Image (cartoon, rainbow, N blue to C red; front, top):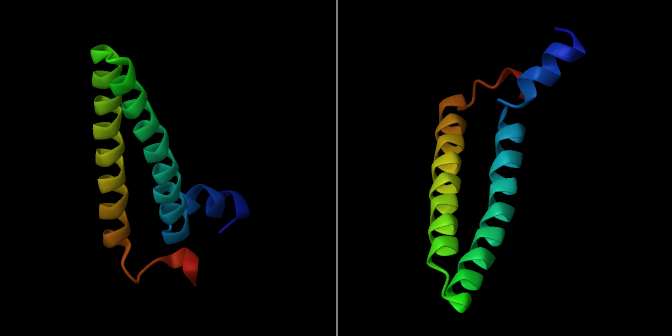
Length: 79
């Protein structure tokens, strides 16, 4: 397997999935700030936008966790 093929497959490896979940956590911090700001400004449209963003983040993280569970112990890239 060439280095390019390994790099392409890294995204679907356990470390790649954990990294994606970690970056989602940073996204959650941003969304929490957006929600607080929208509530402070009493801006319903900003609040709806933040809630929809939170739903997308939760769904994306759930998909990553599901993929992580599917990998199990048979991850070829971990050796």
